[in-house]
Length: 136
Image 1: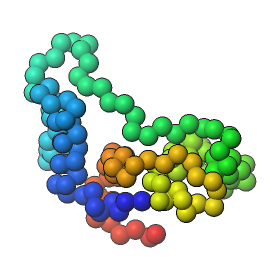
Image 2: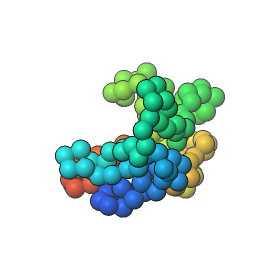
Image 3: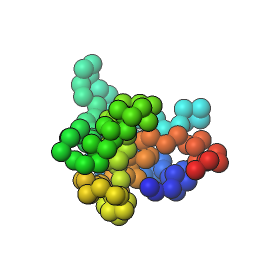
Image 4: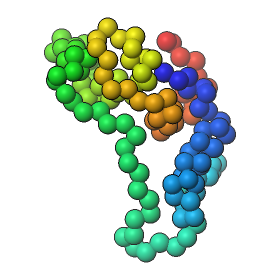
């Protein structure tokens, strides 16, 4: 997976701000606020109940027992090897890129483009994780 430290700092704000500007420009924008991190700021008035923005899922992780890798995740759950529900692990596997999936010991499942992976990581990696050492 892409290194989280590649996503830290002002570059990650730029990535999100560029996306919001491209798809939602004129109505909302992204800023960094002290003590809050990234925030969505309205640039126009909205009516009560009006949709501010619409985003489609970056990644869809569909539980499909015909996929050998997903069957293995289910087997690991049955063995008691997983701390969380199988869908969480499957969602993580579904966020891998084609080169990452190609190294798996199971037939390849649907991968995501590297840009999609970067965007997904941007949503889920806390900024402080990039400053702390990892045990892995």
